[in-house]
Structure formats: C-alpha cells, structure tokens
Image (cartoon, rainbow, N blue to C red; front, top):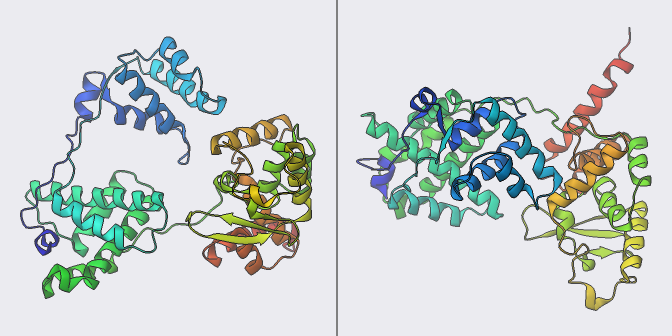
Length: 405
C-alpha cells in the first residue's frame, strides 16, 4: 500500500482521446456528443443525463436516432422527461445526424488503488449516504486515473501536493465547475488525512507522510455562492395553495411550500412521522439514517388532515405508523406536479422548480422575523453559513428600495 502511495510503477489504464478523429469523420462518442449538447444548457440542467440515456438505449437496440426510436423510447415517460429527448433530437438533426460510437471502455484502476479507496470509504464516518460515497469514489478514481496518465507520459506522480495541484489544473483546463473541482479536492484531502492517521498500518515513511501533508496546502477555487433557484413571495405561495385540484396534491405542496421539505423527504414521510397533537414532523433527510423533528405548522396540518380523511386514514391508527403517507410516490412525479401548478397559475419562471418551494419557506421565515438559528434548525442545514445565503438574498432584494439617495 505504501508503494501505491509512492506511485512507483503503478499501472492503470486511461481512455483514448478520439475527439479530433471523431470530428474529422463526422462521428462522435456518446460522451462527446452529449458534451456538445450540454454546452448551451444551464450547468444544473438534467437534459444531458436524459439525452445520454436515450442514446445508449438506441445503441443497445441498434436503433437509429430518429422519430421512430424517439416515439418508442418516450412512450411511457412522464412529460418532464420527454422534453429533454425532443430537444436532443432537434440538436442531433442540426448536427447532420452524425455516426455515434460507444464510449471507450475504461479498465478499472489497479487492485491496490481500488483497495485503498474502498478502505477509506468504509472508514469515512462523514459519508452517511450512498450517494455521497459514490461521489467520493468517483472523485478518487478520477485522481488515480490522472496519476496513471502522468506516469505513462513519463512524468512523476504520487499522492502528493504537487500531483494534486496538477490534477486541479487539468480539471480547470477541462472546464469543470469550481464546485466540482472543490468537491474532488475535498475527497483527495480527506483520503490523504486518512492515510496519515493510518500511517503505521500502511507502513509509510517520513517522505511519504510529508508528501501527504502537502496536499492540505492545495487551494481550491473561490466560489461566490449565488442563488440558482428563485422563490415565491407570500402572495404567490397563497395563490399556489389555493389552486389545488386534489387533496393529495394539496398535502404535497403544503409540505414543500409551508414546511420546506425536500422532494425526497416527502417520499420518505411515514404516517408515524406526523404528530398532530405535538405539532411536529419527523423528517428523514439526506443521510437516510436519522430523523429530525421540525414544527408542523397549523396551515400544513389542514392540508394533511384533509388528505388523510379522504384516504380513510384519519385519525391515524398505531398499526398504520409504518405506512408511507404517499404510497409509491417518486421525486420526478413531485417535480411534475409542482411544474404543472406553477404553469397553470402563471408562476413558472426561470429558476423556479419544486426545490424553489424550500427556498420560499426559508426566505419567508426570515422576512417574518424568525431568527437565523431557528430557520437553520427548521430547514435542517448542517451549517449556519448555508442559511445565511437567504439573508444575503433578502439584502439584495431590499437594497434598491432602502438605500438613501
């Protein structure tokens, strides 16, 4: 393992760069074509991901990318997943319908590197959810593959500050976002700190330890935190909640826009998590392991009770506590419901989505004089800095009105 950290003779494999050849022959790999498609889309857009799934489906079934495969693929998809495919199909036709090749297969990193990553991920107590573990694994795999490419090019590479700096420079050259670069860098720094703590077990010498410690000095990219999601004002939220077509939709929108739940938290809510007497909701958040209690507002109680009465589940029996409040509800269905009402009521605008309703709760609580600490607790932000961005947005909103001439 110490030899791995020194990177003496580590052999990995990297994909071939076929971009120039692909462009010359009017043929592209899947990733190349999707990268071009994503260029004019917002950074947070999910269109490239859905388009890529469609292209892979066509390759797997030997279908052409045309109206026939489009109709077949989208036949049972919800409307919000059809739009990305339709837009990609128009883009593909404008490109001249080039030949698409599967992405080159990547060979996995060496067993030693893989073992090091797996041991680190297993011991990392801060990575509570599967998605976080997958993200860190992806970041570390990318770094070790970069080290291999350096070795194959005849350059020295190791788990050291200098190699990590070179890796960051390559990510910047490949137009990775500052957020992604900092995330990758954070994963590498945590791995290096773990290696230092495990120095006896990994039999590391002083030179290797110093190289590992140098990684902590590598600087990430400055990010000016901004607001990618819009929020509703109080009148718009009232308008949204009065235009509901069903008790089920009303309960969903109330949990989002009155309590500030994330879409995934709505899908995880069980009947036993609602305590009407104590006016509390127990919310299973990102970590998926612990529930946090937040206040159940009276206005939200009205919507929940109406929905449960309609289902014949009111009052809630003890035998029902383990049942989900919304059976078989998916996050994409919630996003579709929110978008439907926003459009019907003329509230849909750029940056407005289901997650915007969570921003709405935080913004309106602050505007109504609730303390920053209590808003943090209600929205279950891990740090107060996250909640402070709502204050910044409020300041920006009132700046022009309140600044003296």
